[in-house]
Image 1 (cartoon, one colour):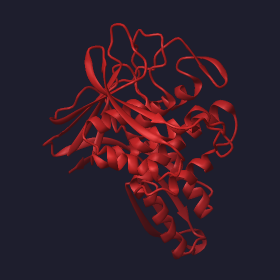
Image 2 (image 1 turned 60 degrees about the vertical axis):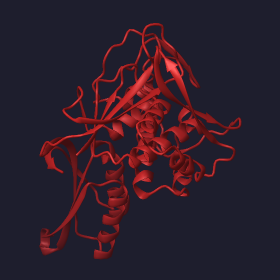
Image 3 (image 1 turned 90 degrees about the horizontal axis):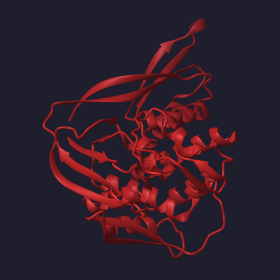
Image 4 (image 1 turned 45 degrees about the vertical axis):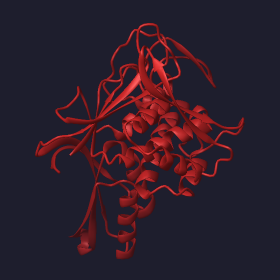
Length: 329
């Protein structure tokens, strides 16, 4: 099994993650080609080797023209779906944007579809998320472990004014993720970085038992006096026969849809990142024939797949269970 460990010593952001994945071996030309396919004019990913705190690391920079428009989630989906990304790469990227949209929706009290992406809707953030999804897929990582995430402290200026760190949107995303305290007055973890952790991380803890194959170092734009502002990713293999992970089981029972509709829903769930799907025929009240659709997914994808079940089947309820499972390679 191929495992990646994210060492977020000074937090995590989109550009740090993208740089670390490329430094660990993801082909930068493939990543650049995927970014170019988004159709964003005059956008270029630039990679530079820099020294942070005395250590070599890679920095990812996005060159682009000045922009003024704020984007909605539908705009982001259109940009990603028209690209040449693979189905898995599109799914990973859209899951990250979905996580951010849901957090911003709760913070601002508006629907997910009407929320404006401000900082995260900017071109550099789109490139960071899409590039991270592509680079992660290229490295063929089976499982991600992440250490406790330091959000930072102090205050930061955003489009809505001056906000405490973590900002409200980032704090929403970080629910359920172990945090650590690092004595730096700065925004160490951005909304993009928090969304990457939410979608990619299967578990949290120290460096797991593995044989290291590659180490990638990606630095942030800030420089600190006594700490290297660097995200490291360790990639290696383990000979352990089983691995533990947390998954979500979504279940709904239907008696008013056709077999063709059930098949279509299975296809949509698979494209949305479901780990497994099964359909069981059942007899319901008054002798009506029906089906139970069960979908196994990672927790970060549960909200999107649950919404898909509601939209595509017309069901009135979806049961959600959080499970632990042991898996073999």
